[in-house]
Length: 111
Image 1 (cartoon, one colour):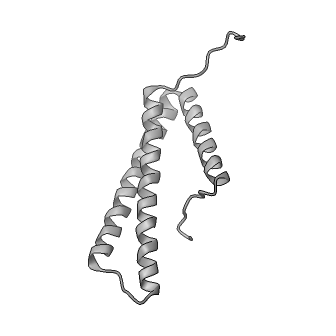
Image 2 (tube, helix red, strand yellow):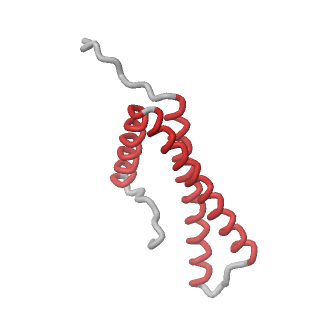
């Protein structure tokens, strides 16, 4: 039985902003994966190679660009479509909470 209400369908801009967030998270994951591998090697007495250091810098720069892109898109969405921005924030919160419940906590600079 329908109560007559329509389910909210996020705008194209909201979906693109969500994708920008996922790209940002992916870049962060790739950076931390390599950083952990380099740290493990260092713990075993193997210093990071020039290639590893350069790749870490590249990944960190890429992540920075992705953070700025997500921020730009989220700010623009908040200015132009409050309902879509609210959907995005709810979607992010749910996604992060689910990841925490699944034991997939987000990396931080202190990990």
